Image (tube, one colour):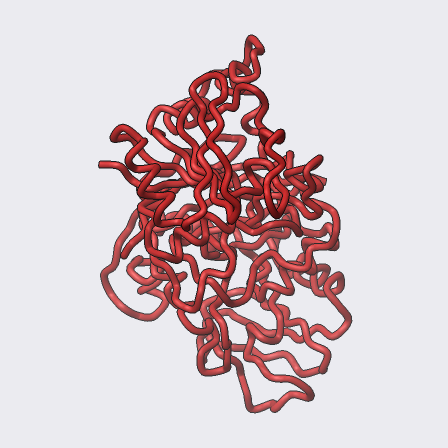
Amino acid sequence: MTKLTFDITMSLDGFIAGPNQTTEQPLGVGGERLHEWVYGLRTWREKLGLEGGATNRDSEIVEESVATTGAVIMGRGMFGGGHGPWDESWEGFWGDEPPYHAPVFVLTHHPREALTMKGGTTFAFVTDGITSALEQARAAAGGKNVAVAGGASVAQQYLKAGLLDEFQVHVSPILLGHGTRLFDDLGPEPIGLKITRTVESPAVTHVMYTVVR
Amino acid sequence: MTKLTFDITMSLDGFIAGPNQTTEQPLGVGGERLHEWVYGLRTWREKLGLEGGATNRDSEIVEESVATTGAVIMGRGMFGGGHGPWDESWEGFWGDEPPYHAPVFVLTHHPREALTMKGGTTFAFVTDGITSALEQARAAAGGKNVAVAGGASVAQQYLKAGLLDEFQVHVSPILLGHGTRLFDDLGPEPIGLKITRTVESPAVTHVMYTVVR
């Protein structure tokens, strides 16, 4: 069955980006250090058209996530930032051939025609809310999972709405001190989780959780 | 060599206690759920004079922490709360036989005579700051480690001062949403860490870090 998931790298102190995020520096000050565990992996280098790189437990985790994802949901900020009506010439942060290779549903308040990119990525723009985006993504996922790619506020909205089934956090060994928190504004009630898998690595700690309803 | 460490249970969203901490409810609302992984362990039940309980990887981790600790530092809030000059009849939260079985150094602004409790725990009250408390604890630790027991602000002070060598976080599978954060107010510079050990368990994820200077 199609599950709603996310798969996000977080600092030990809970941040998924450093402070002062801008269009030029989408991960904020220091935020790229969160993802150091990925940069040396063959799976990552292949996406960038580079040769070489490590194959290890970390790369298996990345490959698994790619293999099980059939459709993606993201916020406008993660697609390409900005506010207000679209500049239709702006095709987002991800270049001609985005690394998703799947249907992507972008949450926005402003309608826009869908974009078809190279390599199997399409961007559809959803203006009628998170439940509608989830229904559209489920229908497009071909029985695989729907992944919330980010940002944090989109992940929080699905979590608070009780729509998230499971998620994986890659806990990066750094204390950023400031920035955007993955888990924030979650409401007054604690949310129970169940650990479904832990994979250790010298670079990062991968923990998969199921949301307990 | 004597290292300065801490060993603290944290929710996945970074809290070591729930909101509204009081003397009657020192872990705040919902905070006792953080420690559910400990309550069933034989090592914990023994401390309370109870029989039975589980022996597993989690209990080994607790035993290791006890065995390697020679002295403890804590804030006044963790000893017994309160502000201003001491009520000398108040011997803190921990009962006649506190679970430390070691010299404990309590940071406070108000001088007080040392207390000798049952079972090898002594409480000395340190009014001249964190460096003095560390020197005194090192001298008392008999070559074992000095552990910062808490609260969060004391751990943060040692971390920011560059005095902490390593620490272990037990990441509990719960999102508390509100409360006291373990890592907060850390200053503008990211702090680099190195993962030195990861121990998985179905109940909690134990990760040990070395602070990279």
